[in-house]
Image 1: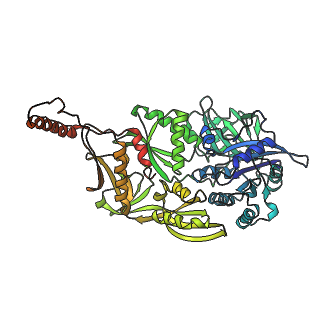
Image 2: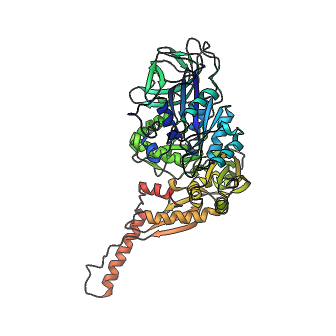
Image 3: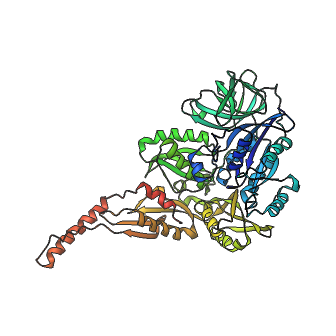
Length: 597
């Protein structure tokens, strides 16, 4: 155990975690030159295309230290985007140390601080690293002072590195051995291992990744999953390198995988404890937090008969992404589908993309919203996940919505536009302090519903990319919310319903009506698009009918002949409008989501 070190890499998005991980793998000869490629640990096409890490990746390296000893280093590369912070929290639970990476040209950003607090809560040993020191725009002295202010370390504790050129890689490996404590635990005690991730292999079933806290696990041993109470034989155990390496035995402090032949994805839960069947541990491992979804949206198959396939795909995806939460629901317009909880809009986009690429499931996504608490006059408390769950206004006492504490770090010249954006989103500034003369931190309290759509994109554009954003949910507060319905020829389209603040309902309704007028195909009859609150219509657009020129064949004669034909057409149009139904194309649902662009 004294020669094992478990650590993760944490940083803000685009600060060079994956590139630094590549250099560590090269330096320890874990990957041969032939296997080497950029973002070696990012195995999803999506991760490579977008240049971001979506999944945490564990890998084992061997390092020969200058003291002549050989050390086993278990590295977990984590995502940097706020929407994937749950992945980071799971990685931190399996480690004793963390490499805190800060870009020398960008300085400390909001997600850096957020991830640092996560690591400190778990008492991890922090190794600060100043990355990209070879860049011309690197502000080495200034950013070093920011790190010292943030974690209170000495200037000589900060390692200067460059993932691109390989500067400081040996220093990092040496610091991991010297500064990160060896795992603690009882190698002779009952087996106790924490599952921190899992994935589905179509040939081998569910593969669980775990960290052993006490005891040891052997191939062929009968094990029990404590929370689900299921028992299996460990068909194969081993360590994680670029591929899985089978082993006969793994002991305390190690990170590895287990294959038990489980085909049902429901039978393994991330955060569960693995123990021995013959000598079980008394307690499950505590302190693993449940995921709290922030954004809710309905996901429906395009064809109703694909519902069961979609369920299977969602379960397999949930294995690989434990922060996805879903339950079945039905809609009048879209049939059977799932109500899903996501950590943010990027998370929703990634899930939709993964369903399409990995499982060949094309889906419709409804307007995203957050969950509210409604209180009736009889004192009943209801959780509202969709606008259609809202009780009749006559029965309502009040509706409460979740508020967040938003932390924005930017340059002082962008204070004005950022403040006006946040005020526009019903935000209230609570704190403002200068981290350095060139960096300011602003804290706002604002409703979560206001940041769901386009807040982050607009923040990036008004600050020219210099603002970083992080948030934490605080509490529910009473708010004047109304249900906005969209009607087509009087028929309500439940997939386009939304809960909005009363002050913004009219402008939001107008924008949706205008957008639908552009998107819906014209019919043989007139279509009235209306936005309404209850029975009150607050916005309207009209799509005129496609007219056939019925008078074209009428030549000669007086005007009465033409009038007669036009009157006949008018009657037909009226009848058609009464019996005609408006079909909303699938892409319209997706386009309406981009309403603020």
